[in-house]
Image 1: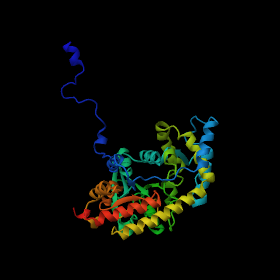
Image 2: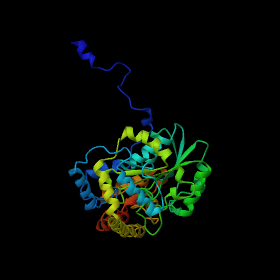
Image 3: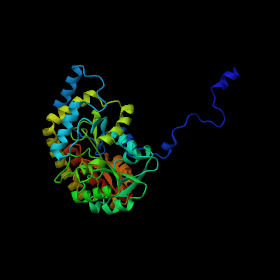
Image 4: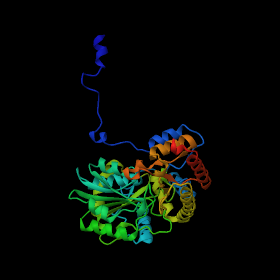
Length: 403
């Protein structure tokens, strides 16, 4: 019996299977802790979740339902439905004059997250450096690291509208630099790259033979400015992976449908990864995306106009209560400074949640450059934003900042 009891015990010096060493240096998302706290509370106004509060428009949902009823429940081509790729090619051409051959230059992916992952793994070798803005979306640095690369963060600042500086990028380029990862319109800052600044960075990419991965998931959500896809600039299409999707513009986050556009020779390499890890994007979601491109424009315009109304309220409100906020021109985020409160951003976010039940995200969750700021999402109702601003003003006036 003793032998049986000992059979299940671990051998001395062994603690069981271990995870990859690569994961040892990969930290968890700085946002998750606040979601966990919020989940246990009532009467919380959340300005923290980065997804539309609109339901996917009915014609888009109906198209998916009809596709299921018609029995379209099997795999599609690895590239995605040809009809969707043709619609997407026409859409990008009409909007930006950006022309992709739907047969071999467009890949339908399971959200932009997959597009980012497969693009990064297709171009990065161990030790390659990839330049990215700081602050930026929480998945960018880990995507580089998981592909074996080394993230090189370039600071963006409020005084420059959180746009990426040519000089800062140029200073960061070394012999090991392989690629530049852009995310504009930006999460968390709402920044949109000015065309002239983007053109200078594009020329740098050409001069230094850099690959560009451009995440343009918020491309239609811009306010009073123009979004320019970097692939449309001279010499850039042949070295750019354009990433986009339907989650933000069409309120389709849960559908997990995105795309990647690139020259055929680059996309062929991406396909080697995509076909093994994903096979194809969800079929019903692809039919929904076709309908989004066919009839969704009026819904995009309506949602964008409402986001703009909320954006103006939030920016004005933050400035009025003493939290300086640079005007965001894209996405649906504001990024006010809380430096004047005497608290760091994590303390501010946690106490605001516990004391006034308003949830925001600490800026440092998006990189060191986000310290001293918080991200507030205005993809929530106008009325809730008004209430949240009232609570934030009360929080600041109560002397909480001095505790």
